[in-house]
Image (cartoon, rainbow, N blue to C red; front, side):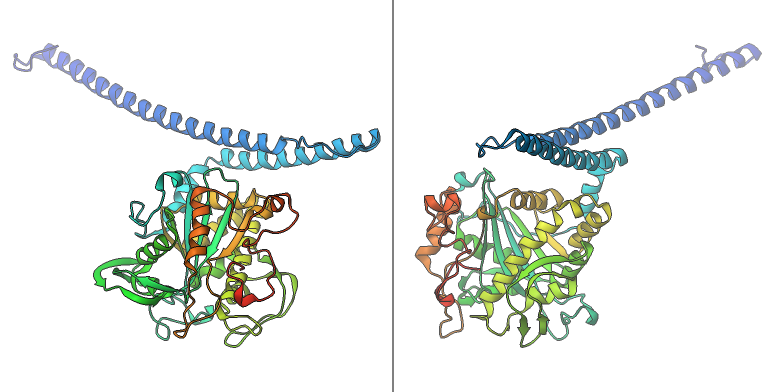
Length: 455
């Protein structure tokens, strides 16, 4: 190396040029090494994600190809051969679908990026308090998933064409649907419990909720000893209604899902309609003739919106219980459609649904993977193990127009959920499919007003 202070002659200048060239080369080499390290890190991340996706696919394939080992009635060799051939074809077809889906994601290299992109679209709110003193037997609930789902009838941002009204005529936040979906750690059942909007509660002090900005303010609204459940959300939003539900149930609510009716119909239209089982014509005193067809009916977004909102239907025992039954049935039908191969293997429908869902949804600890946990748990179970219930009440409004909670039966129900024990009224024979268990929401009561657990 040369000394910059020595006399500058032609030889010195030449040596300095060489020194500067070497310095630039060294710097370029260091930059190239750093860039290579970054590329290597990106490749390792991609490899890790790809291996995780492959492992998920392998696990799915194992579930698909598992053959039921129960004994079958005697058959002729020809029948057995034909049955084995058919079963093999079915397995091959399912495996092919799974492999194709995996290849689509791996080939495009967007699986994880898409999840992150969609998750970023959700509006995050503050709702959860997983250290609340109201949570009972927290250790037993360590690996349970409890989704508090609120259907918000807030009109902010709604256009007149959407048919839900607007904020000028119907201001503030409105919770028309309140449900808890309980998925135990063993994932062997799912229980969805609905709460009437007119349920009489003791509302605690709550921070005021600003529905236009989706934020909880610093202003405190004093509690009220006798109030309707829907006032908890109207005043205190997600935080307040979570407090109330945790107080009633003792469950550790670890996911909050709010869905605005404003954008609800977009989810249905994204999957090209949902097929429901409609028992009777839906003729509502306010919304008009919502749905006159009966049996299996495929409804569009506009129809679905009115179907779950209708609460003045002719023939309903009460305004709440008829609507709760329709809402529960519709949620099951929507999940079934979203998890079907018709949607899962159609990138356009799946992307459209998740985009519409993200647009209409706000929540806490909520994203694509969390919602898939709920949907997959419900999809993979025998229908007899998916229970849609209504929190036990007297079934008749009191003089204040409120539904009254049956404390003892409510305690029994949520004790069973927290401890993962049989639901009240379950019998051994019911597990064999002989007869629906009392309290599962599947039985048909003689007096609908006294049926405290039917949908």
